[in-house]
Amino acid sequence: MLRIDYLRTAPLPPVSFQVKDGTCLAIEGPSGSGKTRLLRAIADLDPAKGDVFLDGAGRNETPAPEWRRLVRYVTAEPGWWTTTPRQALLTQSPQLGDGDDERLIRTLNTVGLSEKILDEPLTTLSTGQRQRLALLRALADDPRVLLLDEPTAALDPTAAALVEELIRFHMLAGRIVLLISHDAKLRARLATDTLDVSALRNPAHHTIPPIQTPSSQVSP
Amino acid sequence: MSYISLTPLDLVLAGIVLLLNGAISVAFRLGLERSIAISTLRMVVQLALIGLVLKFIFEATSPLWTAAFALVMFVAGGYEVWSRQDTPIAGWRAFALGASVPFIAGLAITIFAMTVIIEPNPWYAPRFFLPILGMMIGNALAGVALVLNTITNGVKQDRISIEGQLALGATRFQALHEVLRHAMKTGLMPILTAMAASGLVTLPGMMTGQILAGIDPMDAAKYQIMIMFLVAGATALSVFAGGIGAVYLLTDDRHRLRLERLQGIDR
Image (cartoon, rainbow over all chains, first blue to last red; front, side, top):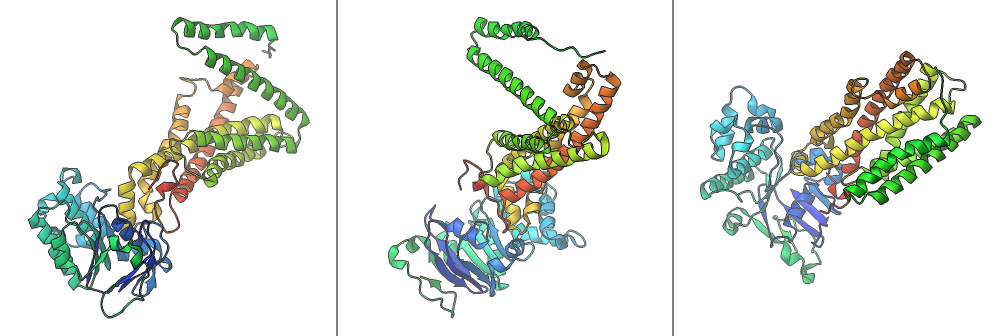
């Protein structure tokens, strides 16, 4: 269970909501409305007042690197600091390299990447290949919460469908997903609930009702 | 060999050579006449004043005056480091880092040299203490200025990869490791180059001065070698401490990159 408690990120008013294990919350709103900043604040990448709890453990009570191992923000513009996909995956999760390359190959294949790229320089890959690789890297050490910022932005329909399947698989495994996507159909298929940040800015909604427990209710 | 004192007339004669500068500026319309006049005037006044002040301090041999002069070096050094930054880190803490790191490293090495190597009487004799401290701070602050500039430019350039590593659970020192390594290397290059080139390309200023003052060239060389060792030590200490300090200033205790602390950068 991920609980957001009066989290303040400009330009939004304080927001509170919770997301249950194995469910997906879609975050909607026009460009520049603060969706990315909200996800970054949940991962504690930007300073923000308020609190975030994962299974009852507070963000500020957990060392920041440990928090981000559990609560993983996956940006739309990934950065690279290794030379090859193999290094990128193994740096994040050395266990993937146990034995032969079988686990690495299976991982790549889940999102339609060929094992031929394993030792290709990252600079020779296409934007779509790199975006899928970045998602695999972010999932490699099994974080509990996935904060996905446009995970299918640079992908063709086939690759996007594979990524959607991968996200669904992780939800089945009990992971919590917060999703920003311009693709309304994707949001509708994956999301259990929706948080519209543009509605939050409407003063009428500023009062936030107490947190409800039955399902991953979104308040307000 | 002996020391030859210069008369005011000697200086006027040397000043004639300076007119060449003005002549070139006028001939090629460089428009530098004003700058040449101001720079010349500043140089003459500053050096004459410093000569007077040092003469007074050397004769007084007082720990208090020696310390007061060192304090001036401290503040001037901090300003010098700050002024050499493309995008300085905002706030007094950054200024304090730039001022205190070269000063503390220079002071530690100078005290070591005075008490263990040169051993004048008293150990803080300003005639030895202040020139050596000046050389240490001067070189150390050049190193710190380079380190800070390389780190701030590095984090701006590598922001996406640094934040990517932080998002994947890296600590601030893991995420900034490459930037820090590159910056420390950059900070140490000038002193290494200076050591390798000294004697061949340039005759170091202090050695030249001692030779002009009538010291045996071999003795001057020995002094210069000692100074080079000390400078290298002070620079290494400063580059290390300055680099670590910069990482702390550009991140926070939640291991976040805080680029907005750079002047003129807005998130």
